Image (spheres, rainbow, N blue to C red):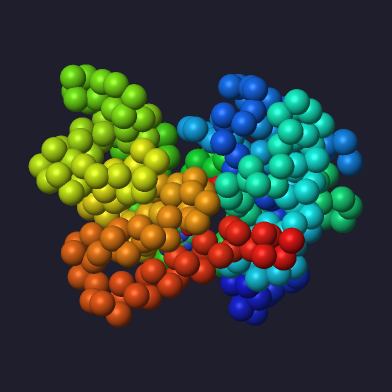
Length: 308
Ligand SMILES: Cc1cc2nc3c(=O)[nH]c(=O)nc-3n(C[C@H](O)[C@H](O)[C@H](O)COP(=O)(O)OP(=O)(O)OC[C@H]3O[C@@H](n4cnc5c(N)ncnc54)[C@H](O)[C@@H]3O)c2cc1C
């Protein structure tokens, strides 16, 4: 965000202070708790959370200043050790080892710049407008992201009307339910059982689409990766209904294959790319590029092991 602001002739200094947050992914079967748990780090007293995530538990997060490439944050060994230390302190009998860590992920919080310790920075959001009319938003939380979106869109609409007499065809729609949220539309008979329940939890009423694809073509009923619940039909759903355009997007965000397999599901990446290629018109070179880009992301999640 500050990189864009730097291009503004009225740029008046960085607005954000990025802090990195790392989570560990550990099988839930290795921990006695089936619930979310908050505990303190014995190193600095910060809160750490265990959050159930399907068959896995997320342990995190760290909160440290970050100066590396904004595109490629990654856990380092010290992050992993910090979180394992806190986990062992809270669950001494589980005897968690480094080898229990299936994967890691790291993200950057675009927090509003202020001096002091990273973990003490405010999580509030701010919208600022420069003299040239560039509107920027930073800070914020998952719990406020729709509010932020609405405030920003309302501001842009107002300025477009005032300055250019351009009027939006409709108002900001952040209060409307998301696609699939009208759950009563899902045919109950098709979504019974564990597999159906997971699809409804993920797609809401649109689980019916995924099931229809899987029934129509046996290949789409197959798993994306052995041992994980995701169906190839979900890959198709992502492309057809939710604008998934890259292999990374499908294997990282639409499914969590990258985090839930030790090797990031690299063996399956080509088959997934080939299915996407049939819908997105990729040639062999593009398939190769997609697989390479995904392999680079997998390497980031496992980088701490190489350096340990
Ligand atoms: C480590 C960490 C811990 C956090 N912990 C908490 C917490 O405990 N509680 C809380 O409330 N919030 C927390 N947050 C903040 C929360 O995750 C964010 O506020 C929230 O995800 C913002 O949602 P968003 O939809 O606006 O943006 P995002 O979740 O960032 O989604 C934006 C999406 O757009 C995609 N995208 C970007 N550019 C393009 C493009 N050009 N074309 C197509 N796609 C694009 C991105 O890949 C991304 O998937 C945390 C954040 C981090 C990094």
